Length: 483
Image (cartoon, rainbow, N blue to C red; front, side, top):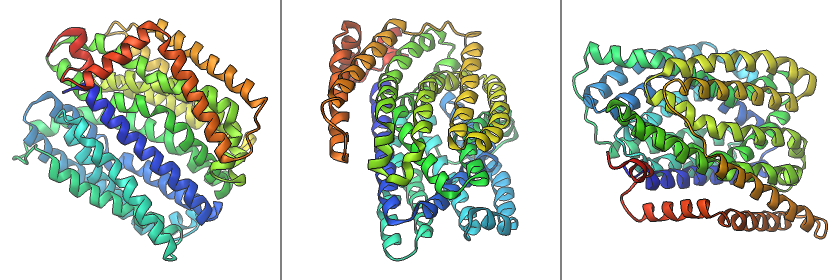
């Protein structure tokens, strides 16, 4: 597998999805009221939290086992049969809890929520199958399809008068069509299931399940609690800030998704040196977007929310800065957390996740009541600090981790240089429209790029990636030889 090409493909898909989502939310923020859009965000929050028990960590276990190359057909059939049990329980629970769910959200969405859970799990299963086959690059089109379908059909549904329910219909339609496309592209056949495969999958999934809880708690628990203690308008503002900050981790997310199956294959072959060589080469590029993004958001947080989404959303500007700072740690965690799972130690990733969940719950409730959406951002950020530090500590037990400190220092210095230029420019040119804001961002991107390329090591790294994109080599191949 060409890791460079696959990473770029997934990064483009992730970036495309983020851009579509970002643009879609900005558009729907004008077609619907903040309260209506808040209903959709609460729907997504419930969906995100219910994914956890509906999957029970089985999809991640399937990707891990298929990537090891041991009886993939048997693993696939066994995993599908295993998934039926928790998925059925969750769907039944949602249907039984319809009155409470509808009352919490503010409209009747419980049945649609049950349908969406099934459709999402089917769609995501195809992603994990293709990734386990070391075809991460081939998942790019499947990953971006749901968002593209959501945007196009969502506009049609909303214009047809379906309101916020139209966005939910569009979400379900995106999952269904993307599942069909991904299922068609898989190469792993269905084979007779066995108890040995079931034991192998469940032994991994029980820990992967706990790690997933941390991820979804991190993504959605603060939104759910804001909906409980504040208003749906606050939900909309906070979630809009979250979506802006999520753009910064496109690169690290794509890299983490790409290297997991390859690391898993190397771990099965006990090629530890290759894994150790890949981690620093993954961390550096992961930070190249998120660090300057933090500095840029620190300058323009209020302007971004005001001009992109509207005046109702500008109240989340402080929360946006906090969330963007936290994304720096998330970029590191994306690599280290998945590396722990790839070397077959999901129990340690789960242990770190449990600590993070405890911090998240302990802080979110009081801080939201005291400081509103700013408190939610602080609680989420602190819980992720705990998760990242613990994952680094546990990973160092098995691997020698050498972070590229020189490159990271230059990236930080380049970001500060960019900020200085933007501060000077802002003293001369006022940012009073979306066009002026976009112009400022463009100047920042060009300035930062010039500073980065002034570093010979980073410049060589960029050129090496370009060369690998034109060949069949991956970063791991360049560093340690073909596997």
